[in-house]
Image 1 (cartoon, rainbow, N blue to C red):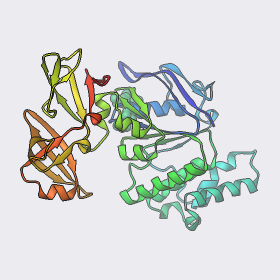
Image 2 (image 1 turned 30 degrees about the vertical axis):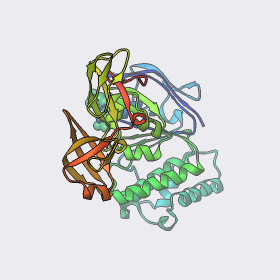
Image 3 (image 1 turned 90 degrees about the horizontal axis):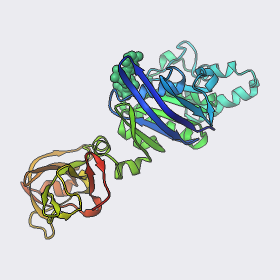
Image 4 (image 1 turned 120 degrees about the horizontal axis):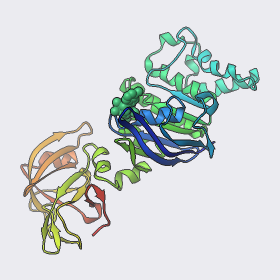
Length: 353
Ligand code: ATP
């Protein structure tokens, strides 16, 4: 096992900087998801770690060893791409065994043992003699994952492997991924633009924006304590509500709070953030709540309601249970508990007032 260190890593294409001076360490044996909107530099960063793209500046270290100048093979990395790269006329078993054939240090018995292990872990045993061409793309991708783990590389890189897989097969693939993680602990970098996938799979999420990692933290911490408005907005469906305030004396007044909050540096660039599910919504007139108007409502797949609420000049979204959502008319009472509020100055989180 190795950890992966990026040291001032930069990649420019002409005048455009796709990855901008990233320094970060991903711990050995962990899964790091590179998550971010289209064009933020996820694929470019992953390709540099793989050895498929040459950095303009900076270094990459595996377990303290500088691998920047090494080829993918010399780095001992395996890769799984969006489209499974396979030999269509070979069987599942043969595809998994193929890369092991190149390893001269491995006896035939060891090779077979590895194949059996992968077939078990990824629940491919029944399909072992199936030809790749006969399988759906989700299963083919599962075989591709099998091929990558059979080699026991130090590092495995996944580039959006579930993008072209239909939703049920995708869940199956994610389940298989979690299963093999319990048994094998290679260091994994997993590129995705799907936040649910990242929240499910990652030990830590490296959230990217415009060529930099804006925050790298375990999924729960990233969700609960984003250190920027970008993190609060990007994670969540919908993301965090952001509410501007007005300076009142030595504090600031926000429409969703009953009283001004005193802060030493009150100013117009301070915004308050709260997640939709953290807003307490009740029947109108409930003690301890502020009156809000319900402007729109949607029922979600899980049966919850997503409400668009207006309170003064502020519009915010809240998530409520089906039972409450069904009985609410056009008015509600809301309460935004202090412990669930975050405060941002110029887009960056600030200490709690
Ligand atoms: P997506 O989720 O859409 O794949 P991404 O986050 O993976 O996006 P990259 O593919 O790394 O982003 O691209 C980052 C930026 O670098 C983009 O603006 C892209 O157009 C640019 N870029 C990437 N590769 C090249 C290249 N070979 N030549 C020129 N520009 C490139």
